[in-house]
Amino acid sequence: MGRVVHFEIHASDPERLAGFYRELFGWTVQKWDGPMDYWMVMTGDDSTPGIHGGLMRRHGDAPADGQAVNAFVCTVDVDDLDATIARATMLGGSIALPRQAIPGVGWLAYIKDLDGSLLGLMESDESAA
Image (cartoon, rainbow, N blue to C red):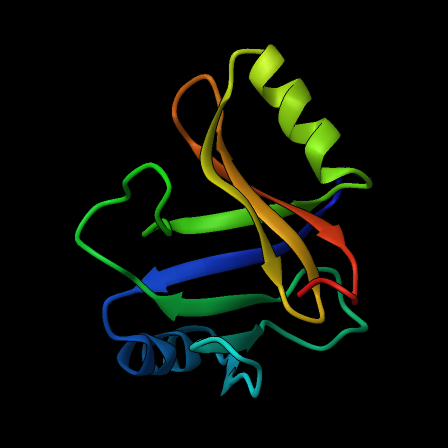
């Protein structure tokens, strides 16, 4: 628990930005076959240290509470999403995007830390719907 397991890049034009990251770093960016408009980002071979991520369409010009973010967000694996959100808010953080299902993957929420920086929290659960 507590390990960064995923990042997300939010983009106004995901296809264009996918090309940018392919050319810049040699990343593989592939449209996901799931129920969301999402691209999987493979940053390298699994035998080397690092994490993979995703790229998604930005909604709006700036992040607003309760809406998807438009940033480069890391997501941390947690055992209990609700307990982690409760602890974060007790410590002075706030909820940026409430708990939501990522079908077949798990439960996701975004919080803001004490400086307003965004952080994704993911509880794995293949039965999430």
